[in-house]
Image 1 (cartoon, helix red, strand yellow):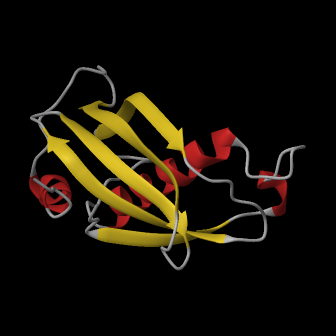
Image 2: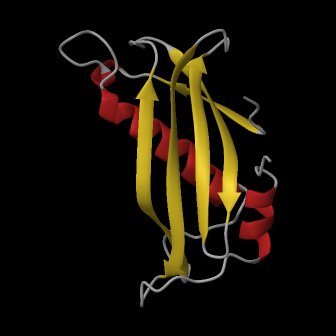
Length: 136
C-alpha cells in the first residue's frame, strides 16, 4: 500500500502494558496524532478557535505484530475517501525501517460547525490538503 505522507512516532515507557507490548488503545492515539498533526499543519485547521471541527465517527484497527518501548514507528497516512463533509483516513503502522507492518487502521471524520454540530462542506485549504492524500 502506498501512503503519500509518513510520520515517525516514538513509543513511550508508559505505552507498554503488563504483557510487555504497546497497548491496543495507544495505536488509536498514534493514528489520531498523525491525522490531526496533518490537519493542523497542512490543512490549517484551527482546533481551538475555528468554526469548523472534525469529529471522529468511526475508527478501527487490525494488529499484525507487537511493538514495544523503546521503538519508533513509521506511520503512513492516506485518504481513501473524501466526501462533501466527511473523510476516511487509512493508516499503516510499520516498524521505523518500514520492513514490517505492525497495525493498520482507519478513522472517519465528519466536519461540523463548532456551535451547531451540523455537517459542513470541506472547502479551501483543508480540502486541498486532504486531496493531496487521496489515493484511488
